[in-house]
Length: 591
Image 1 (tube, helix red, strand yellow):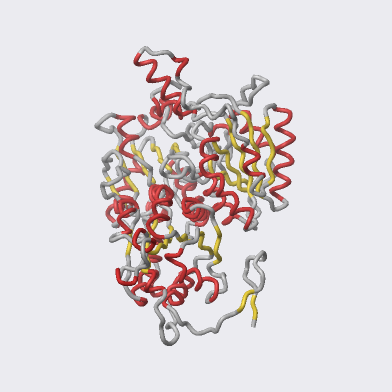
Image 2 (cartoon, rainbow, N blue to C red):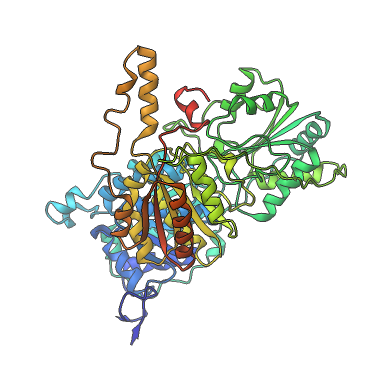
C-alpha cells in the first residue's frame, strides 16, 4: 500500500506495517499526542530513529517536518510560530554539535518567554555501543548542560517509557505559565531499541498544562482599592497573549480608569498605540517624555512589564513616589545565570499571575463609573523628506504602510532604529515584538515561523530587517520556499553594523579620538553583498537594491502582489545611516 507525504514535492512512499516496533515509534506517537503541527529540523544521525518514525510511522503528518539548513533556524522558526499562536511548535537538533549551533536561538526564545519543544539526541550512552570516533565526539555526559541556564526544564530519559513520559512532561511544562523552551535529549540506543506490542493510547488531556495561579482575593481587592482611589493611573502594558478577548479587556480597563497606557516595542502588541489613552510611542528605551508620564502617576499598574524595576528607577530613582501594582509570574524563571531578572522592582501589591486573568479580576472588582468609550485616534507625525539618494527609515515605513494599507498586517520584526510613531498598532496580531536576546541572525527564522502560523489567515506577514541580521540568518528563507510560506521581508540596508559605528563614535568622543575612524571594521561594503541576489538564489522573489522613493513605491506594490499570490518576497532598500531616537539612548547618545 502506498501513501502520500503531506509535502507534495516528495513522491509516494512505501507504507510500513501499522504496529509499533521501535522505541522511536513510541516517542513519535507521544509527540503526535501533544498536538504540535510541525517540527523544524536539521537532520542528524543521533536521532535517525526518530526521523524514521516521523516519516514511516506518522507519515510526516501531525507533526509535519520542516527541513532547515541550520539548527539555529529550526529553533527560530519554532519561536516565530509561538509568537503568533501562544502555543509551542517542535524543533529537533543533532547531538551536542547541533545543540551548540541552536543555543543562541534557544536563548532568544527563553528571554522572549516562548513555549517551545526542543528535542535532541546523543550518541549511545553505553560506551560499548559507540561506533569508533564519530559516536564518541557526538556523545556528551550531560548534554542538557549546554542550554540548562536558559531552558525551563530538560531531561535525558534512559528507556522507551521514560522517553514517552519526558515528551508529555515537556509539553506540560512548556505550556504552563510562565512559558519558556524545554529540552529533551534521547539516547540513540533507546530510539533504536526493538519493542513488543503497540504503544498504549495516550490521553494527553490528563497531562495538560497547569492553569495560571490566581492571586488572592485580598490582593485583588487592595489593587482595586488603589486604582479606584487614584487621581492618575499609568498602565504599563507589557507581555500579553494574542487573545482578542484579553486585548479588549485591557482597553476596557484603561477606559474605566481613564489611565494613561504605555507599551513596549520589545514585546508583542499589548494595547492600541493610536488609542487616545496611549501615551507617546513605544521604544526600546523610555525617552524623557515617557518618564514624565510615569512620574505624574499616583498608581502604576504593571502588566508583566519587561524590567519594571529599571523603568521605575529611571523615573523615580530608588524610591518610587507612586504606588506600584505588579502583575507577573515571571519570577518563577529567574535563576541567576542570565540576568534577565533585571532591576529588583518594588511593589505595594503583587498579583502573581498572567496579565489576562489579572485584568479580568480587576474589572470585576472595580466600580463601573460609566465613562464613555473613547474613539478619537492619534495621527502619526509627518514623514521627513529623503535626501533623494538614499531613503530614510521613516520614509520607508510610510511607503510600506501605503503599500499594505488595505491589508491586515502583522509586523514580525523591526530594526532597533524603528520609529513606532509611523506605524500604529491596532490589534493583538499587528506587532510581534523583538527576539528576546537582542542579538543578530534571528530575524529571518522568526519571519518564517510567524508566517507559517499566519499562512491561510488572510494576514500579511511583514518584517523590516537590518542587513546584518538578514545576512546572518538568510539561509532560513530556503525553508519558506521549500514549504510554500509567503511573507514580505524588507531589508533596510545601510551597509554597516551601524549600531557599533555609533558605539565607536561615542568611545571616540569620550577619548578624544578621530570620529572619522568610527566606521573601520564595521562597514558591510567593498564589496557590497547582493542581498536580493542571496534571496533570489534560494528561490524567493526578490527586488533591489532600491535607492529612490519613486522606485520604492513601484517595487513595494509588486512585492505585495507577489506575497498575496503565495510567494515569499525580499526587497532590498538602501537606507540612510541614521539612528532612531530610542535606539540612540542604548549607547548613551542624545535623542
